[in-house]
Length: 112
Image 1 (tube, rainbow, N blue to C red):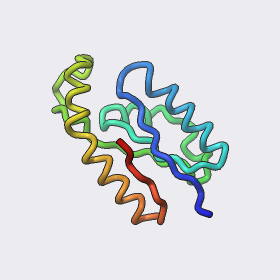
Image 2 (cartoon, helix red, strand yellow):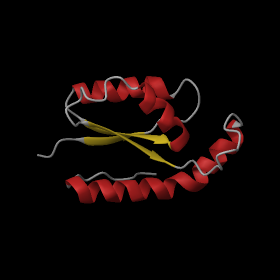
Image 3 (cartoon, rainbow, N blue to C red):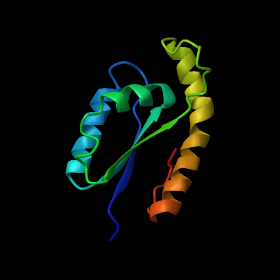
Image 4 (cartoon, rainbow, N blue to C red):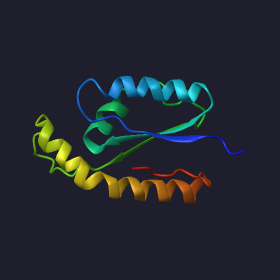
């Protein structure tokens, strides 16, 4: 039986990313492979502060996808950010799932 593999995707607002990271780390400690998906902006912040990146034996992967906003746009406007995410991230997530499935033979599925 293949090792379980989950995508963990926090909402990209203050206060959501770190608790979701803690959940992902707990899943890894239980032997579950985790792909932690951030927006490109949050990915830079998380990976620069992530001290335990080597302690998960290859079970945790950090990736990013675009949130649909331009780099100069204000991400504190949550209504605008949410609309952009809903319009742009689903397709990118599908691409990511297809890539993961091809690379390691997992059977991640996207449910609506």
